[in-house]
Image 1 (spheres, rainbow, N blue to C red):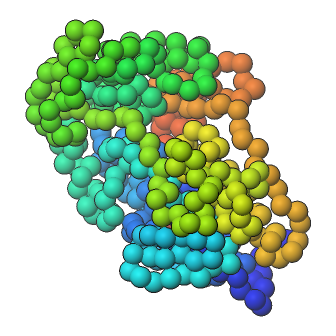
Image 2 (image 1 turned 120 degrees about the horizontal axis):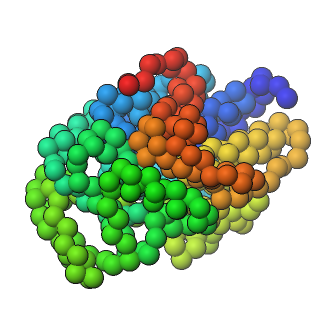
Length: 373
């Protein structure tokens, strides 16, 4: 299939510059007038954000400026305030008419899993300030025993082996989701080796009295009566899909949870030229890897519509898969069709040491950069 741009140039507006959005934009840059819309000045590799909190030398490997992404298309720094089947209206008032629209705005999540700062410099300073507070803390409380809470516990203990780290969750076990009991058992075993305390099955009577990520000693009590004293805490739960911009002709595809229903071809339900992918869809748990695979399907389908070559393909959701690093050298995971649980050395090789930075470097053409050790 040729990468030569046709004489007629359709406009593809990609709303959202996260994992899925940047891949769609880059893949279609040669066959369309691509406009990528995002309010931030850089792509954020959130997979490495927790490592950057405990070691700010990683920050340059988390933020990738958009200006190296596209050879022909353009990136518009603005927020989409209204999107219908034919146009994107920006906060500035500019309207982008589009032949195809891709909704890839993802989700919000509490710091340090994600930062809401729009400027790279401001985001870096937020991480550095919280790093300083964390470094000075003796006790750390993490609310949420999902992937972020467990990963952050491992990152903290890898850098500061003597810090008291407590992970609390109202659930009776760690890592909610369709994962194997053997995976949870292996993660609990490693967390116990690291000295991480798990408080499960009982909510806090009251939320901590301080802001997350700031230094201040406090004591909280669970409903079961367990007291926890800490000097800093982080909220490690709360994914919120970003879909508030959908106009009337697209809103029928929204579920009660504000997620977008899509067809197997990843078209928004009821639409021919509007596609959606990633955290905002009903396709499964929010993961960068899922968004990347969905982006391949969306890009291939729009390319087929533009060139008139080939049939539209369907996205096939993956069976449950997850890799949970607990610092650079520990962790566990499960892969589809693989009987054994991934152990610490396997996780370190697959994800833990590099945190998949090389994949983003390839997308943005930044060349090889040595990671901190």
